[in-house]
Length: 124
Image (cartoon, rainbow, N blue to C red):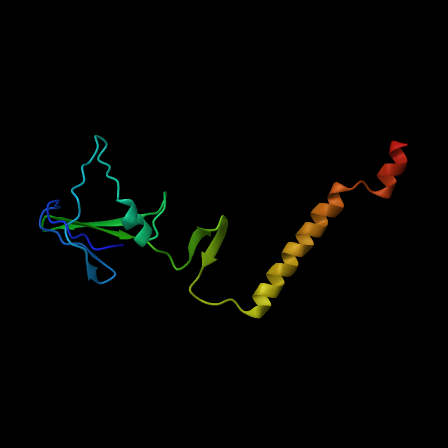
């Protein structure tokens, strides 16, 4: 995200800070009739927010602060594949067991898609 240099747009006297950097004034946002607002795409991208993500709201002293609610494990789509990050590396044993389980499931699925010899004889 690039810091905003233009002071002609404003959001009250708020100067947003993201990852320890000040970004100038944010363009003003308007609530729709249902009370919703849209976070600018650069902010969503920087915070890795996607549709369905939860935000924590804190309001005090005339200010509103939104914070992403992050669990201990996050699930994100990377290059079209869902990837879960726990923040801790997986052991080789866990990885090997998972790979073997997936291979076993595939073998069972493939074997189930072919008729057995007994079924072939009955069909004749």
